[in-house]
Image 1 (spheres, helix red, strand yellow):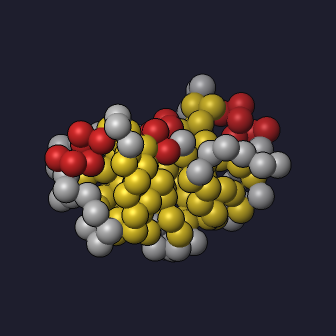
Image 2 (cartoon, rainbow, N blue to C red):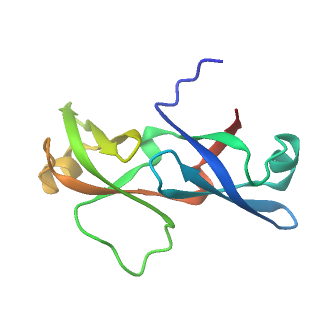
Length: 139
């Protein structure tokens, strides 16, 4: 199946915490980082997600925020350090490609934000992704 979602990171489920309606799933990405997805319990059951399962973490580029320094006091659990590899700016939006351990992420942010952060190839960044914005596909 082909998808329009640019960010597709392979990994292995390391833990599942089921709740009444939702489950949190910790995924060890191929680059060694940990990512948390909050999905419905029904989806976790339907996909037969369990520790050791191979999955692909899917994140829309519009759901990736960027920081140029560590951020404290924030509820966002997923914080992937990386380096900007390219920036393509339009009148309103910018597409930022980030190299992370084991892959690449794309963030779609406003051009003003990219300019304010002085993003350019080589800039170290931290990609911030809410766990509720991470979908999982069983491999």
